[in-house]
Amino acid sequence: MREDYQHELIPGPDIDFNEIRDLFDPMLWDVGYLNDVGFQRASAAPVKTKFHLYGYDTTGNIHSQVWNGIVLARYTEEGSDYSLYEEAEEILKTKFDHSNFIFTYTNFKESAVLSGIGTRAKNSLIYNRKFGFQSKICSFMFVSKIVNYPKVTPNKGLLDLCDGCEDCINNCPVNAIHEDWIDAKACDNHIGQGIKWFWYDKMQPDIPRKEVETWVSWETMPVLKWGQGVDGFYKMDGYQLKKDGKPIPMTHCRECVLQPRCSKAPILDENY
Image 1 (tube, rainbow, N blue to C red):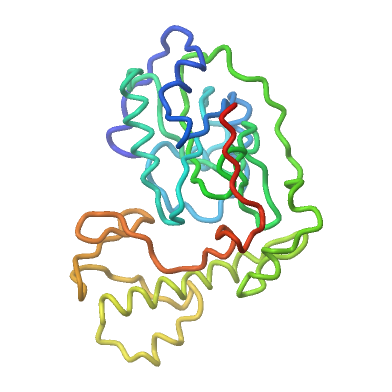
Image 2: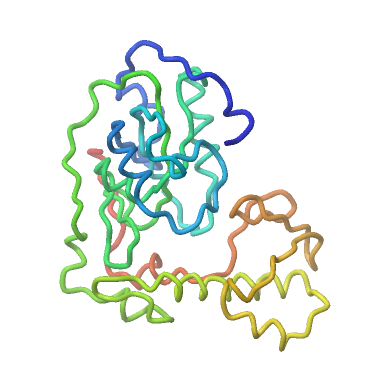
């Protein structure tokens, strides 16, 4: 848990869901509600790797006390853009006391499905009802009871737009996507290849290129050390790389989310 999150959470009066939703620009955000049972289910769902050690981790103890809250999808075209966590927190703090809500690291994909703001696609990614695949997801628990939230029936099945479509299967460079399963190891290792060569080009370590070529999986790769590179100072903050203090995208596979690799264009429905 982040040090500044070790504060006492104090229940307050009931909160109208619309008060929360209205804080977020509808052209950039989608907001859904998740009850305590939903948070428990999401926390029990498998998470590949705990990259983001920011916030309250409900995955370690599925019996930990949880409350109701919100699930947010933030529009972004950058696969490595995780700025929505702090951005959403700052937005919430303009209206609500920090003792009443807490950022939660859990299974965000499952949270999005259970809240009704997203549906799982064949490529295992979440297709948001407003922004398609072009979004990132986070969640916040509230101690106070949230009322007047939308009654949404989650779609726990496969995205209907995937029926008869194999765009992601045909375009995956490592054949990680299959009709009914994902080879997560092949996907992760391919992403690792992009990251390692980005690191090698920017940091120019005193390591033979032939040795780096042998790093074909996360298990064979050493911890990549960042610092002063050829064109700036690089620092890995959580899972986000920063150059001279500013977040930057890393070169890695984004075939799953790139348009028009997937023929399903993002949807922006102003009714939400």
